[in-house]
Image (cartoon, rainbow, N blue to C red):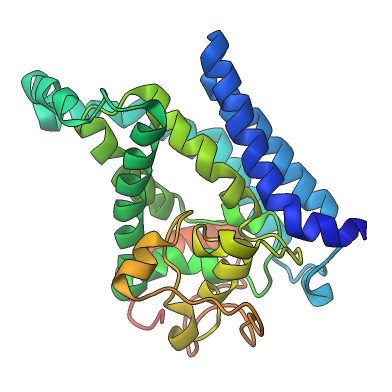
Length: 297
């Protein structure tokens, strides 16, 4: 009974937690950054703990030589890459736009709308650019080689959401957030977008038998996202949305079936020459070797 309730309400509760904490912090003048990060970390930890007792695929519980890669990638992402991008991104945006253009940009974003509507506008824009970034990473050989590190795991579980090439992450980050900065999106609106979507990202790869119902037609839940990790292009070139599936629906790449919603296997498209079984460092460096990207997909 408890497992059934958790399967149905884990994601709704996570969304409610993140949104609720964020709105309270905004109302009382608290730290909005912490209001996003702390609940998201709790959701991730809860997903990892829940995998021990309500696993979706038992064979995904066993490590496949991928744990060290996932841990190294996550440590680099949180310790270096993400903080560096947060610090550096405003610099090229300011240089590109110029002070006067930034003032114009500030007038472009509809900051006079209700806060919830502003968050919706920012969410749709960020998800649009993220969608096309992700889709191009599946189309262009050089970008696919970057993205292949993320798809190299042959199982899905709570940690491999953070298995990603630093350059892949940087491209996605810049294309996702630079447009918001260019049009003058208020910081609290950007953080509102993160508060809304982080619970989805924290559970997107979880090895949990979630049954999120109608939310599968709004968010790229773990039920929806499993198709994206299929080991063939016919099934895998679907569900490119970062956290939402709206643009997948618009552009015809959405796939979800309430029954039988499970690809036969996950991993890289075959045949491939990508060194998925190598160390994280070798996989990252392989991008810069001659002839790296000719047969990645």
